[in-house]
Image 1 (cartoon, chains in turn green, orange):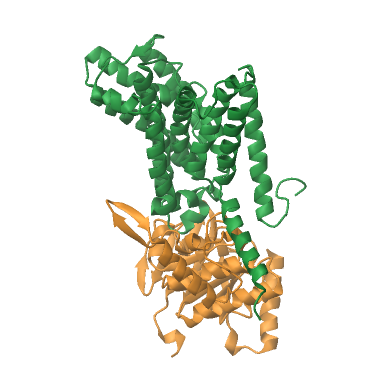
Image 2 (cartoon, rainbow over the protein chains, first blue to last red):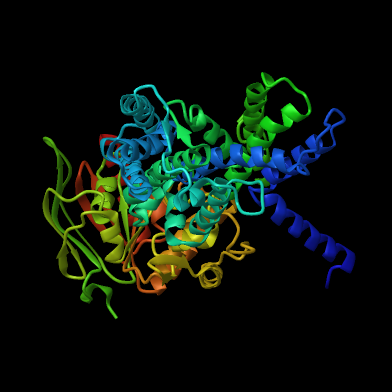
Length: 346
Length: 257
């Protein structure tokens, strides 16, 4: 006995709906669309929002720094670890690069690669202390945050460092506007690396191992023969490397960097990651969601100014956004599991 | 074919594991043959978990030898034990809830193609194989191997882990309290999966603190007490009364402990 056709197509519709609803990227994407529309059509807006190239340029610049940092943080959080030191590594990359170019007259590319190599070492040290000595990554990277901030001050001595090679091609590729658009190159770097990382997470063995490493401190993965320590170390290095790269891209875009560069970006990246649907408990999350989360933060900052909300309200709204989206994620998860409450009242 | 004449898949020969002055396991001898289910029963702290950890590569024996198909081995990690064909299913550490069934099924041994040194997953193939094998162990309630493992019941999770061991041609399946906290119906499902592993000629080591759980599945039952294997009962050789005595013995053993 077959089902009536109406019921059958309703079932198909429901399944298709569930597939969209079930994607972690659904909620942040919806939030981006709503924010864009609200800012564009708000009565006190006189300049437009997504129709204004200048404003989109600002949104892209704000999004690309937080977004690039959040990519590595996402992978690391999915594997069950944190990195609070990314704001310091964000400033360390350009500090080393700029210092080498200024003091020793190094070529921009040499400075770039040495900067990235040192930043990667910071990530490796974070990972080694976490995995081998067993100090929680929260503590290790908090300590590293202070240590590297101190090192940045020693290198730069309280003054900003300028990117000397003013009109070189390398600088253009890193930081100039994308030809024919108001958007600076760092945004394209973020999207490009984000898409590559999304494929790695979703379609490679390393990605599969990263998700598994985030469950029960890697217990399941280890029992199944996954080299959990190696997977976590790789993600620690990735988080630091992308933070350093984000700092260097901003350096190339702005032409100067200082110890204050990237301040708070560690926390903003975590906000972007959580708003993007990644779990604080590991094993669940997406890189694309984090980029959307960063886009939400960037749009909010610019959009509030456009609709004439005093800028003092921005951080408050970020806080509300963080808690509300984490709450929604928990509720939606409960709904997906068949309506059982998972947090409130057991 | 008599199971006892074949080379055991795993054999413990005078195995001892010491922690300081305390022997967690003392002079244990046990052999598990292909197609044989051996129950390992004992109270908490009797040394069952220590034996599991040694066989599955988490710790090494202080003295004695572990043989796999007649060859002495030393495992430095669970990865090595798994490569030698030992599949251990822990009560809590079997499945990652958040991941799709096929991802759990192939975790650690993903089918892949190498492109520029990167291992890309062969998703369609893994999903198909996973679907087939889940049906084989009677997991018919599963709609698709793309659904998250969180949707499985306790018994279904154990069955998934067992079907994984069958697919990967494991030699020995180690089950750590597979039916604890399961309903009667769920227990029956897991027992069917164990039977299926047996038919595929795997040796099965079935650990439980409850004799009643082990009895329906096991061919032989080893009873552990304070770190030693105090008795090995051949189920086929015993009458129902004698079995009841054996159960009672393990009960008194537990009471002593």
